[in-house]
Image (cartoon, rainbow, N blue to C red; front, side, top):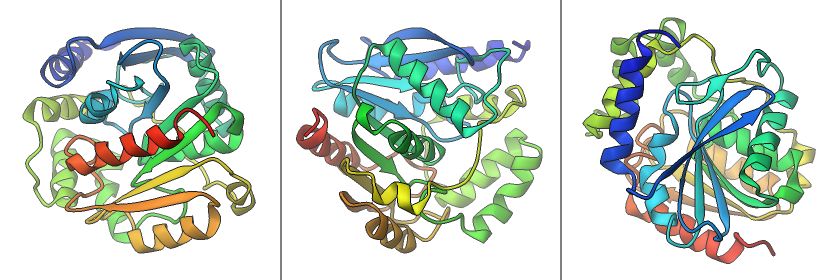
Amino acid sequence: MESTDDGFLAAYDAVLAARWPASTEPAEIRTPYGTTHVNSVGPADAPPVVLLHGGGTTSTVWSGTARALGTAHRVHAVDTVGDAGRSVAGERAIRTLSDQMAWLDAVLDGLGASGVSLCGHSYGAWSALHYAVHAPARVRALVLVDPTNCFTGFSRRYLLRALPMLLRPTVRRRRAFLEWETGRAALDETWLRLYDHAAAFPAARPLTGPRPGPEALRALRLPVLLLLAERSRAHDIGRVAASAAALLPRVETAVLPGATHHTLPLAAPAEMGARIGDFLAAHGRGD
């Protein structure tokens, strides 16, 4: 790790101390693609839920969701290998979708979870949806929080605004983009300091790729909860909802009032945790 990582790790730990339950348990899982860091909350024998974060945000962004679900579930928030976080990439890089699926296979194996509920936001939702197609027998229920590149593409305006940040991710550019998408919403300052440090994280980026094919989605029989941000600038949520309804046999859709793509899941309305909890209570043990 680079010398700047000391500040990043201190900021990461500060978010855990400020926002996560004192009972949070860290773990390191060895995979063929490096060591994956996981923050876990809840009774060890409760139904497992795996949370996958969006790009550049780390697993710490799930604090509210972990608290909401952690009484009835064993919640595992994962730092994606190759993205900002405490996971450490190995010599073997994730280069293909098959690699990404094999990494998640290894993470679930390391957690000792034969069947889980998967919940992802943004890029994490893309990964979760692909994994449900890859290994439907291992996924009891799927929660997609304002998923990107799953059912429709990104908004052209969103991509144009994001381009300078993607080309050279400085603190100033990342903050400017975040303020634009969230409408300058008030976000937790402790987490924002971590977000700023992530701009200097080593240059590896998570895998990106195509949307799951229509035939694969139509064959997906597990229950899906689709939560959309009312004010998302990442995409047209009406088109996302319509496409998901046309492709997924068992999808429930709800719009989160006042939310934008990047206020989720950190500053999600209380309704989000309640909806996920109710959905998993009905489906998270398998049908």
